[in-house]
Amino acid sequence: MATDDKYYMVRSLEKALFVAETMATKSKWELKDLSAVCSMPKGTLQRILRTYEDLGYVRQVERGGAYALTLKFYKLGKQITSRNDIVSMVRPVMLHLRDRVNETVNLSVLSGVDMVVIHQKTSYHALQMDSIVGTSFPAYLSASGKAFLAFLPEEDLRSFIKELRRTDAGVDSDKINWLYRELEVARVRGIGLDFEELFKGIRCVAAPVFDDSGRILATISCSVPTVRLDRGLSRKLLEDIPAAAVEASRLFEAPARTFTLDIDDIAGQLVGS
Image (cartoon, rainbow, N blue to C red):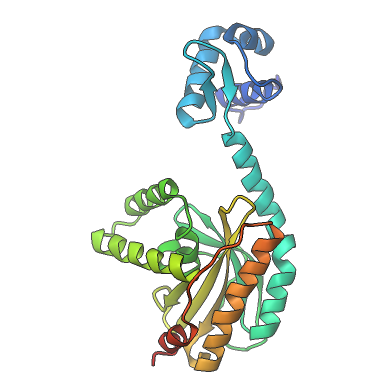
């Protein structure tokens, strides 16, 4: 462990991370051996291990037996790696999509209860969404958010709903029920739609990008001013955005998925006819 006297250091956190780093060098550890290697009293070490255990990062191989790291650290590392890699991998797909539809294309991920734009290819139109990389917006109201939330594991979705209700007093049972209905439709269609729920005068289509385990990784979307959204462009968006998301998912070797999408019907809804 570091011994420099840095005023901002949280020593308990430093100790806990040191324990995790040490545990990663072997498949399992007896308490006395780990205590010796970490030069840490057993009482302190046990509190750290119990905390890790409650959070799902550590398990006891058997009651009163050795301790081992779970795969939660691995999953965390994989998420970080994927997020760092995804922009460089998906950039050509987004560029191709932007050139096909000539609308701004966003790559977004879930962060808390918001979607965050992590990459963008802007259209050549003078009239376009005024957003930049790093922009965040409520997930439950957006096409990107619906496309992402629809494919979250059930436990993660419940955690999202709980946090949403805690942070937004305006989200009542009616809105939650509405959201669940939206997500059910998004799972069938393989797209999320935003009919100006987020921004007045802007409609959006989004599709999910998956990783090799089939887990939702990000969304690709286009937000279009309603004054420019005719039936022809609507059809193009509904064809090309899901196709781009499938292409991006293939880059991550995601399993193939089948969706049911009535393009003519939804194109009519997008233009309001």
